[in-house]
Length: 300
Ligand code: MN
Picture 1 (cartoon, rainbow, N blue to C red):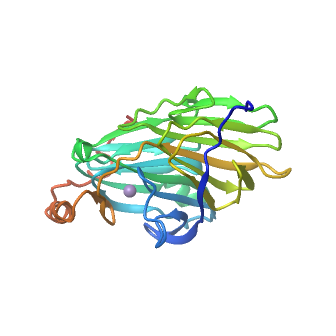
Picture 2: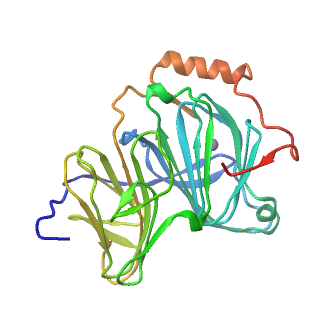
């Protein structure tokens, strides 16, 4: 950081609450809550686990629909298998990302792999929901799958690591193609490490701490707290607070600025479009997941 760096003001710090999702797994969710519905263009941030499952205990989210936005799954531990109504089958392993553009609609399941269901193991990951602009809400569904070694990684000066999934942080560019400008990065910060993120003017910038404690500009946040910055100009710098390592996600994006009508797994612009989505789902127009064994294994 140079002496001329302007730091973006902190808008608020929100603390995640715990919530049960899917087949009964517990997530830590900073938003949406009663207080914060969304941080445009982000609609949801869930941390799944970390949880250690015994044999036969692992659970996930069986068949369910989505329309009008993107679901992004980033696994740190464990292995999730997704199956969907386009016939795609894929396993998301530690460090891997599935960036799913639901668009006009999919039915998918997000379940621990057969092996994980039988033997148990640690499950830990994130799912974020990224909104789509009205013009893209009904585009055909699309998947982008990335393995851990496809992400841009940079070692930090004091032993930490920066991984850029999408967008640009500290000059490192992530590989994911996004409809609107999105930044998604994961930093492991050791004492003395600092990441400077030059957020574009007017864009949303969020720092979510999920282990240890971190300092983001002039705010200190501990595990489970998310720091939201003003949509002004200026950079975000993040470092570990104290001597213990911290784990943080950086999330940035250009606000879409359109009306949001959301109902469960559907996020549209108007209530009529939500009613249409429910009708389409009930009438089977979002399709169904092909029977086991008939899917096509692919990650893209
Ligand atoms: Mn889903």
